[in-house]
Each structure stands twice: as C-alpha cells, then as structure tokens.
Length: 538
Image (cartoon, rainbow, N blue to C red; front, side, top):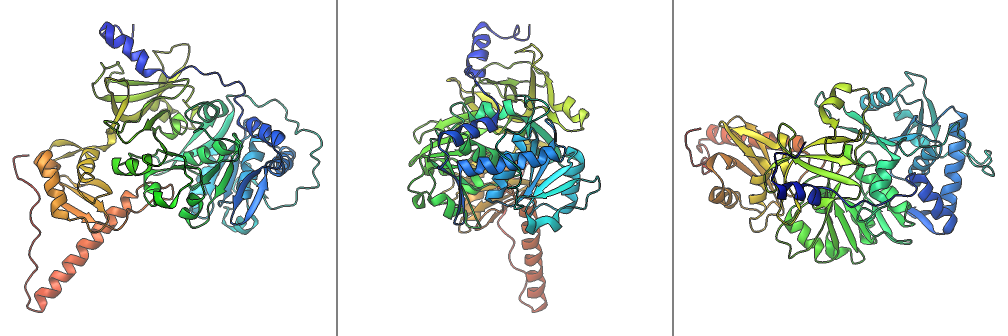
C-alpha cells in the first residue's frame, strides 16, 4: 500500500488536502466552447487590437474557412500546425482554425524566435503546414521537409462555409490542443503536447475560469509561445469575453481590462491605480512577491497560481487576501491531485518539505520524441492507479495545517555555496522585506558567493545585506547586492537571469576600469566595498 507508512491522520489528510474536487466537463473540446459563443452572440466583439475588432460570428466564419483550407492541404486530426505570428487578430483566426481542423497549434512569436529555433520546432513537431502573416513570410525558415506556408491574411472567401468542415474522424478529448516548447537542459527546447481534455479542465471549471463572463475585457499581454497566453486567449473566448490584444504598450491593454493574467514580472510593471476596471488578477510562472500580491489584492480578486507547462498552465490556485497569514499557491484545481513526496516517491507527512508531483486531468501527453525525458519526468500514479500518470514538477513544497500548499522554491534552485546548501528564493524573500524593495533575485556567482539584484535602483545595498545577515547564516549573505531600476524580462515575461549576470559582469568591468584610471592619474584606488559576509569555516 503506497500510504501504509503514514499515520492514520496523515493518510486521511493526504487525500483531503491533495485531491481537488471532482467536477464534470461535459464537452472537453475547446473550440466547441468558442463555437457555442459564436452561435449565442454572433455580433459580440471577440477581440480588438489597435483599433481593429472582430465579432464572434466573423471569427468563427474565418476559422471555418481556414480549417477547410487546412483539410484540403492534408491536415488531419492529430497533426501539428505551426502558428508563427505576432500578436494580432489573425493570430486568433489561425489558432481556432487549426483546432477546427483537428490539429494542435504550435505557437511561436515570429518576431522574436531565432530561425534556428523555428527549424527545430518544425522538425520536432513534424509540422507540414505553417500559418503566418504575409509580412513575416521571409522569417519562416525554408522548407527543409516541404512544409506548406499559408498566410492568414489570404482571401479565403472562395471556400464555402455552408457545410461544416468534414474531418476523416472526429476530434477526441485526448487529441492535442497545442504544443509548447519549454527550455531544455541540452540547450534545445522540448516540445510538450497538451490535450483538449487538459485545457478544458482548467478553463471550463472554477477557479480556472476566473469568473469570466460575456462582455468582460481580458488583456492579452503574454507571448503566444507561453502557456499562460492560452489562459488569456482561450480562457476569454470560451466564456464570451472580449480579448484586448496589446500592442507595444502593456499598460494600455491593462488599463481597460476587467481581467489580467500575467507573470509577477509583467504585473510588476503595471500600476494598479491605472487599472480601475480590473476585477480579477491571476499570476503564475514564477514566485510572486507578497508586496505585489498585496497591492493588487486590495483592489481585486487575486489568484496566486502554480504549475509547469507539463501540467497545463496551472494546477493549483489560491484566492489570496491581504490579511492571509501567508501567500500560498493554494490547493489542487478540479479533477487534479498534488502529492508531496520524498526522493523515493513516498508520501510525506503533513508539514514536511518534499517535491511536488501532479496527477489527474492536468497531466499532459508528454515530450515529443524524447522517451528518456518522459521516463524521467512522468511516472505511473500509484495513488490514483487505473493507468493514470503523475508528473514530477521539481518544485519543493509542503502542506500547511489548513491544507494550503507553500511553494518553497525548486530542486534546481537549491545550490551549494562553500559546501552548504542554500535556497536562493529564501534569500530573495528576505531582501523583498527590506523597506522600498519591490523585487529581488538571487543567483549563484561561483562556488563561494551569491549575487543579488534588487529594485528599484534606490534600494541601499548595505541595508539589504544587513537584512539577510540578521536572519540567515553567513553563507547565505550575497557578496554583492546590485540595485537596478527594473529586472530584465525574457520574451515570456519571466526574469532574465542570464541578462542579470551579464549586467553584473559589465558593472564589475566598469568598476575595474575606473580603478585603473584612478591609479594612473595618481588618485589611488577607490575603497573596497564593506564586506557583507561574516566569515566562518565552510
């Protein structure tokens, strides 16, 4: 028995805490939900982008025409169709058209993705048809495998939409909805196939539906290649909202929105005072600083969420309130489970720290063409049984006494400094408690030192180091704290750690140059910074 080593109380709490409610999803095909909205309110505005709008009826008609074209080009249920676009209304037509043809869409931002990565995506996903916009056709790599290129601004009106698109077989709930590419340890991203059942389970149940109602304005802020963009786009369209697709100005889309979905890094660049209509905010993708959560929770329903791409956007959510004792990641969403396990995959007692594994309807199909990685990260679920699988998130967590999950960093965020194990997030958390500090990131610099970055730029480095020294061991104290005006972002709206390390190197080189110049001119070297570390045996 997988739980026989636990006390009777912990066995009961394992299921009470770790299993989300069972909620039926009657039609787990995502595009069907959008089609129902088009029938119910064909003249309602589905999306707007820089002054252009499209109604649900027109979006559905254009997607039907595109689906007919895709089927004519040989696309079949279970295929993968490339969606290489910039944020736009044609982006939505392409997404919905691919789903109607029975294919999974494979999104990439054509303006940001290097050609080598696009080639890798095409090969790995076996893409035979790529959808793009005419202005970006030259950015699509030449057809190594003879893929067909369709521009979404083509005139498709010659294709009849009087009859439904006829597929060789019906789309099934376990067919792919999208394929997203996540960073890989080899330097090449891994393709993750996520099914209709996976996506419908988070979008068509509460709280993942975010209470979106017909007419609500949902901001589309994130890179289309990021899984949270599916939450924005499909989460809006399946519930009859109006998707506000941003241009270059993130704030402009947010200011008129009722619902925001973002990473904490993106959200931190938006002033809550400028967004009087926002009713609901959901964050995920990286740890959320409590001051940021407080700022938005005072004005809106704030959901702190967690889950990797492989467990379909998020698989835990917490409706956070300012007077909550802690900022947790909440409980499993409907039809999902979370297990806190030790290194032998045994369930841990409530309150002990372990690695979080996810089970239930959130667990995706797996990595494309990578059975070794599938075997490492996906495993048979001994708790649910019945052939179900669970996914190893590499997130560390523990259950609170009242059944909430605390996120305690990642297994790969645990580094060794001077031979001691350090959790980088714990250092950053202390720095974020310093007066005036809104965000902090801590990285391992070398075998003996850490470096931290804090913003805004007027945070005092010495005060920040002393704050860490007051509560953590000496080996946790960053050797350097660099104040910055803002933390750099990746194209997916997360903190760009590589850019931070480059910034540190540039500042050090500038300091060395200044010191050399001062010595040459007889001014002497500048004084060394005050040591931040209480030295001890490592």
